[in-house]
Image (cartoon, rainbow, N blue to C red; front, side, top):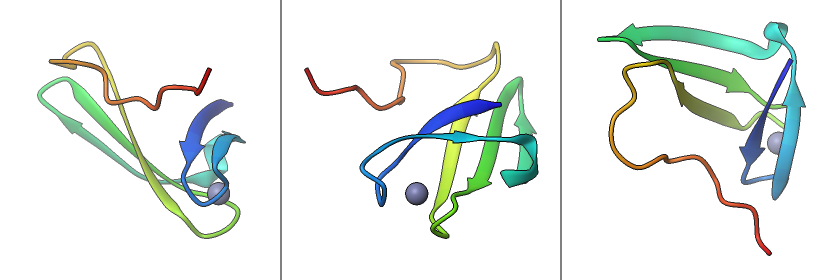
Length: 61
Ligand SMILES: [Zn+2]
């Protein structure tokens, strides 16, 4: 299980492995594409090769 920010929900949503639609490993950077329960496609960047500032959503407050 993992959570990701869904813009359509406007909040973090918890996903299971079954929501994963695509896995892509590019030079150690892993792109995980998940389909939210509302149909929104969310791409999560993970992996040890991640460079630069984190693109993960910042929680308000
Ligand atoms: Zn959603």
